[in-house]
Image 1 (cartoon, rainbow, N blue to C red):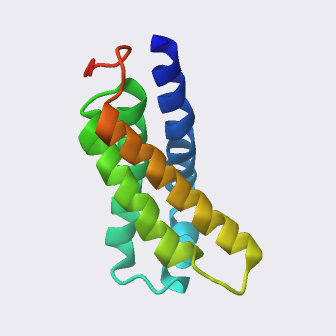
Image 2: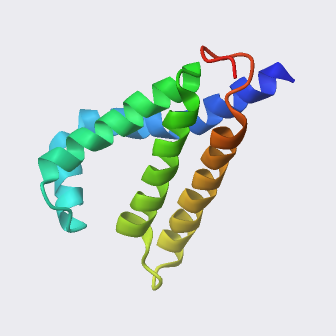
Length: 123
């Protein structure tokens, strides 16, 4: 059973680490996308997205301060769902919207129950 928590954290962190690395590899395109979504202070939003996605993803993966990290990632999922994916006229965007809400629910489970025994926090 201990491996299940680790596997869950691996699967949940993978999307954030991969997305963050993708943003880091294409800063101009990422900031243009943020501007298209109407985000103010695009440079700050870019830096925040790298910190949350790469930093949060890695911390979640290794299980360090996981309840706090999971709470931040849950809030991030809801915020990005509302900013980037809430477009009721687009079925594809609404699927992404619901995916983000689903991930937020999974992170709240980690907030409630911890990372499991195979983590740096050993909660």
